[in-house]
Length: 289
Image 1: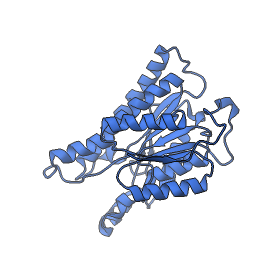
Image 2: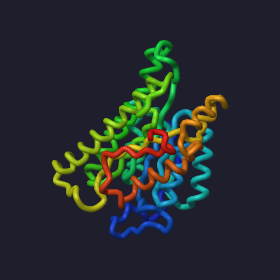
Image 3: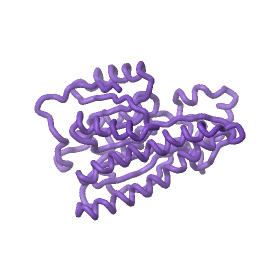
Image 4: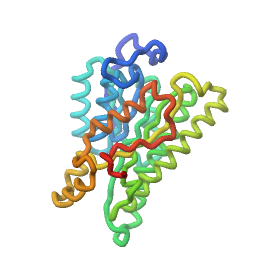
């Protein structure tokens, strides 16, 4: 395991109360001073989410697995763009429950808390059902669904103690529509809908039981975002003819950009989004109309 980051600037402490913070010009809401952990955060959509949250003033903890060079480049770019900001990267396997708990503990230890969790890490192993092995099925479910559960469980315990927090699960339009050759992926992403709504209800239940106020202030919310076809490395491997067919299915006629997903996540993560919980936000160019 490797963890790297800038030392916390001298004199800084826990995030200041929400009432003392104001949204920055051009930013949808307030994340300034918040600590955000984004799994799969050093590339693609995850990296765009990290940049969006950092633009709003959040401290960033980005998770990654195996791909060390992109993580090092991400770290160098982020520390150069946000000098003095606390930025860390955390190596771990989201498909392993112990690794999930360890990463959450690391972030809390190094940043002094955790305010925002974005469960973005995901994998695909595409085969038709007839050719899909037991391992193909189990590996995708372990990362995409079970990993999100274990990360959320560890983060939720900390957030309930603090009385506030944001959990955002990255699902997919495939979880709604299904796809030939992606039964494992579709099932894992569809499962995130039920997980999101159950966690949202349990967060309120646990806050009430702990006699924490739930109706005022920042609150503790859990939501999901369902991207459609987004221009990332994952789609870059698709043959041109297949890509043409996919693009033709999208009413707006183009692939989405990672920054468009990040903007939605940033909105749900901000303090001002306290009245939104248990919801699924589609960002797919009208794919599911």
